[in-house]
Length: 158
Image (cartoon, rainbow, N blue to C red; front, side, top):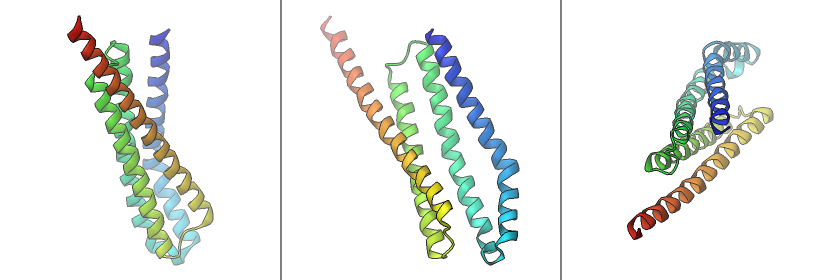
């Protein structure tokens, strides 16, 4: 059953990654040009916004890869190892990077008086979701480190 659950999670992570890549390649440039056509007074913001969005895709994909690595460690019964803890650290750092990127992007758009309330809500959802993921990964990492320390102490006493 554990193998089936991790296989399901791996498939979901793979589908999310492919979907994000397809959206970045096809939908995002078209949406940016469409928006620039509808609001020509904000057309100069098209490329900085695209660069910011593409910049946040990199840590997102790194976090997905680390999640796949973590699932692989669980499949191989290496869940309580330092490699699993380092995967959680990378996920935490990627989530914090995404939050900081979106917060700085929102500040940039506010200075340009171009932050639409709908975009602001989407940005806030992304920021807070990333922060929750970062906090959760940090808690799991601390819990895993404590379990590793207990394991090492038990190995030394036996």
